[in-house]
Every structure is written in C-alpha cells, then in structure tokens.
Length: 143
Image 1 (cartoon, helix red, strand yellow):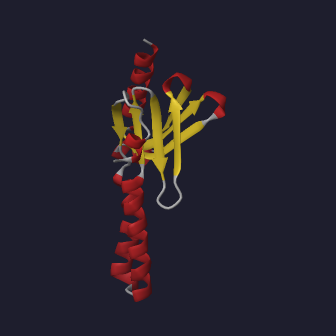
Image 2 (cartoon, rainbow, N blue to C red):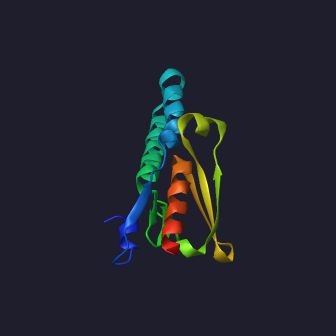
C-alpha cells in the first residue's frame, strides 16, 4: 500500500496521480560519464553508487495525487516530508517550468492553501496537466 492510499478515507478515490520526471537522473549520469572518461578511481565509484542510489530512491519514494477530497504529496527517503490540503482549502496554484522543463516536460507545482500552507512538488512530469486535474477536482468537490 502506498503512502497516498494509506492517507485516504474509506469513500475517497484517486482522481489523478503525479509522477516525478526522470530528469532527477541527469546529475548522476553526467558524473558517471566523467568518471568513465576521466577519473576512474575506486573512491569515486563508491560516490557514484551512493549518488545513483539516492536518486533512484528519490524517484521511487516521491508521491503526489489528487483525490476526491484532498491533494496529498510526500517526499523523502529517511526523513519524510508529507502534506495534504483539502480541495476546499486550495487558494492558488503556481506552476514553474524552466526552459529545459518546457522541452522535456517537467516543472515545479506549488499549491497554496488556506492559512499560508504551501505544498511544493519539484520535478513533476506534466505539471500543467496536474494543475488542470486539480482544478477539475476542486470544481467537482464544490458540487
């Protein structure tokens, strides 16, 4: 059972599930190429293994979803940062897409909730689609 499913109520259902983009692997990929062509030292091989492990775990353990009642996001491997905001408490959504994100299809979504609460989801695949689904869920919850 995923974290999102464990936080849902009995009659709640997932409307849209976000996915973190594979761009999180660009830095270890570049470091691996540098190691292959330049360095080739055993110590740096261990550093690369740790870096790849961290990025894989970050990719696997980052979750975001819009449910019929709330937005739920979770990040973290050892120390977990999780947040949930009721759909009725959402005040605004900001999408930041850098140039490379525009080309590759990723960005950062920041949701503002009542009381100054902010939920940020970095490296989100198709953040504009996630925003559209979030607004659709907010409209459905009002009816």
